[in-house]
Structures are given as C-alpha cells and as structure tokens.
Length: 602
Ligand code: ADP
Ligand code: MG
Image (cartoon, rainbow, N blue to C red):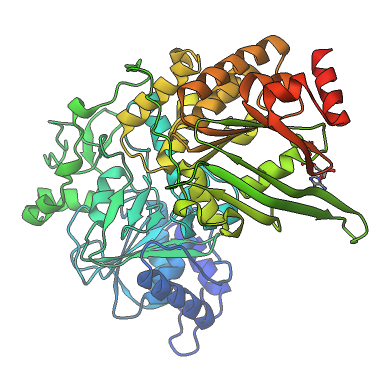
C-alpha cells in the first residue's frame, strides 16, 4: 500500500485512510479512485466537448469517493486526462494552501503519480474552482474548472427538456431578459459570478463561478479549458483560440470588477483580481502570482496583455436603476402588411379538428370546415357558446393543436403561400416572435408572473432580436403608458398586479413587436364588469389606431359588438352563420344566433 504522503495532520490521516480503503493499481501500486472504464468515458466526453465548443456533453461515470464541495467533476477530468509526466497545480479561491486545494492535490498527485507544482508557468494541468490563474497560460496548459452549475439556463428555465430545446434552437432570449431585469433593478451589467457567455457564437455557457475579471481570459485563450460538473455528469470545453463573449446588451457593456487606484497591499499590483481582507485591505486573490510579483519573478508584460481593459467599469455608461423613462410620442401604426394582390392578412380554409377519446370510442368534432379571412385593419369576431369550438380554431391558428386539417395562411409569411399547419414547432415559435400574437383569457398564459412588467415586454422584444437595453426600455415604457399601466409599476413583478392590470400588460406585450395578426381569446371574460369595460375600451382604441388583422373569440356578443366589424357564429364546431356584426345583431337568421343575441340584450 502506497501512502499519498506522510501523515502530518488529522486531514492527512483522513486522506491516507481513504487511500488504504481503495483498491490498488496492480502495476503502479497507486490507489484506484477512478477505473479505466470511467476514465475512457470522461475522455470521450472531453473530446466531444472540444469538437463542439460550449456544448454540454453528458458522460457516464461512477460516483467519486470524495465529499461534496471537493469538485468531483474537476477531479474526474484531471484523473482521466492526467499521467505521470504531468505537473499539477490545484487552487481553491486563489490559493494553493486551502484545505480543499491541499487534499485534492494530494489525491490527484498520489493517484496519477504526477508531480505537484504551485507555479502556473510550469504546470501542465491547473485544476481550479474559483479562479483562472492571474499569470498567462499557453498551449502547454490545460485548465480544469470544477463547476457547481453546468446549465446556464437553469436560472430562467426549470424544465430540463426546455433547456435542451433552447440550446438546440439557440434561443437564449430568456437569459437577456434576466440581464434586462438585473440592469433595471441594480443598474449594473453583470451577474455576480459565472456570468453567462456565448462560446464560438453558438452555445451559451456557464463559466463556473469564476469572477467576471477572469471571463475575458477564456476568450481566444492559448490554453484548453475543460469544465466539469460531477453530480450532473456533464463536461464542456473551450478549445484554444475560441471566441468567448460575455452576454451583454449592445449599448450596455459587460463589466469586470475593478476599483480604480486600488493596489494590492502586499505586492502593489494595481490590475489584478483582488479580495478584501478583514482589515479592509485589498490583496491579490492569486497568492502565487502575488508572491512572484514580490520576488520580482512575475512576467508582468505577459500579465498586462491579459488585463481586461476593454471591460473596465465606465461610469458614463452606467444605467440608472429604476430610473424613470422618457416616453416619446405614441407608437406609430405599422404599415399594413398584405400579400401582393391579396386583400387578406389571415386566411383559414376548411379547418378541421377531431379529438379522439382515449380508447377510440368517443370522438369530438371540435372544428369542421371552418373558413374565414381577415383583412389588414379588420377585426373578425368568432362567437358561440361554450364548447362550440372557438378555442380549438384559435389553437389551430397558433399551432398549439396537432393533427388539424385544412389550411391557415398569413399574408406576410411566404406571401401567403405556406400552410401554417405544416410548420414544425420551431418555425411556429419564430412566427410567434414577430408576426402573430395572442392575448389569452388568463394573463398567466401570456405572461411570466414572476418577472416585471417591463421584463415581460422585454421578453417579446428580445425574442424578436432587440439587443439595445435603452431602446427596449423606452419601447416597454411607451407600450405600458399606452395601455395605462403607471410607469412607476414598470419594474414591479406582474404577479403583484390586479387582474385588469395584468391583462393590460399582456396586451402591451402582444403588441410589442407590431405583429400583423393578433388573436384575442376571451380577452375580458375573467375580469369584473367595470374592469372589463375599461379593457374593452382600450382594445377598441388600439385596434382602430393600428393596421392589424384581428380575430376576437368570445361567447359574449357585447364583446364582439364592441370590437369587430364582421363575425362568424360557431356551433358544434361549424360556422352556422356569418356577416357584418351589426347586421347579425339586428337581424340574426339562425335560431341559435337569435338566442345568443337575446342573451346579450337581456
Ligand atoms: P369553446 O372554446 O368554444 O368553448 P373548445 O374549442 O374549447 O370550445 O371545445 C370544442 C369541443 O372540443 C368541446 O366539445 C370540447 O369538449 C372538445 N375539446 C376541446 N379540447 C379538447 C381536448 N383536449 N380533448 C378532447 N376534447 C376536447
Ligand atoms: Mg374557449
């Protein structure tokens, strides 16, 4: 049995005990903490990670026999890629002498039969949790980062499947919404640690909890960076000479931590990442670098190149948190969008949808041969009692309903040639970002109640490609003003709003990107009568000032009357009567329509 080192402290004894408990490598007499099969799995993931920079690669492994907080992910990578000819440096915070750093180093060195070093310059593998070393690294170095959270989207998306979907579609709008909200509330660009970065212009990556100071060091670096999360069993990589760009708005740059004029109390360096001591002094976080500077052995020219000047805080570009926003003139109505030679924006033809019962026994024909078209600037009503198929028609147009028959076309989409029912899910989502908007009866369906009113509108704008913080904020303020939401509520969480106010925010969000087609599904049904009347008035104004094609679904003729010029009457999935709304009200032909009219007038 080979000891990792001579026992000196209780911690050393613990490590030695661990070594004794583990089986020995038959040839080298070293303890086996990771078997060859597991190493191969990790190496395979490392290679995949290098091939697809920033992409999170899952790998198979057994649990490591180490405590949580030791960073089993980094350990697995180091043990999988390291060998006897390596020089291993292990740092925790900026220090080699912390308990974790000492013990991890002993375990790694003992297991690999590699040499330990504190010197970044001579190291071949640097394993770290919180820092990228201050000193320059080159092609000989591999930086292994132990990661506490591998999925950057977890902060904004709980579903694992949805996270994957967003990576696949490079749909990172929600992350910008998070940045928008932080800026609006704190005025500072940049999350605490682990600020999200775009790797190779493709994948969003969580760069472990390294300080923002270190993030620019990953960009176009000469060394290979491997990031690994042990419990999640995920590996990702930044190969040498790869672009790593911190997420930021076009007009509000990313910032690193930098206090102008502050020098390290020990070595006098001005531009390094510093920590504050208990006596309120600032000292270099990278202890080894600090020692070298003091000994006159540090390569300061090489370090100079790495100082992230470009990202030093610029007070002139600071955003005032929770500032009032200048509101310009009302948003001008966008030009009507029609297909050349066509007079419709939305055309539904022979739409059908059948719900089959679970055992194929009961079948519900929710929509059958439904046809109508809507011109730019026109609002069409769809009326019928509950269960008549109104929501089904709506869902078919949005694309929330599979297996619909017939066709749905929008003038602005491929000149009206493409049947939206044939689009795949991601194409439909893109359509929803700037062409087709929906206002639901339940505001929770159209809004994220956990984020602010401004953040919800930012969500729509960012999804449509807006990247200027100030323009987003101004647009959000204009829209909220237009729907009579007080500007001082702009940065309040929507969940705290009343029902009527939530519906106003939902309407503002739906209009944010000037869609060509707007669908309103029972927009006032959930509201108290007086509140509903106010929202109805607002909708009427908004529809007359814009060249939108609108479909209003309601069971209530007074809503249809207030908002629409034409209407179709639905019953049991079919259109039984249609015409000008006034005419339908004044002179309904079908007995069912007569009932609906009588109900509205009673
Ligand atoms: P409306 O919106 O006019 O109240 P819906 O379009 O919601 O009507 O429903 C039309 C018919 O389709 C109803 O008979 C309803 O029970 C049925 N239906 C709606 N959704 C489903 C579903 N997911 N599964 C089975 N039947 C459904
Ligand atoms: Mg309905």
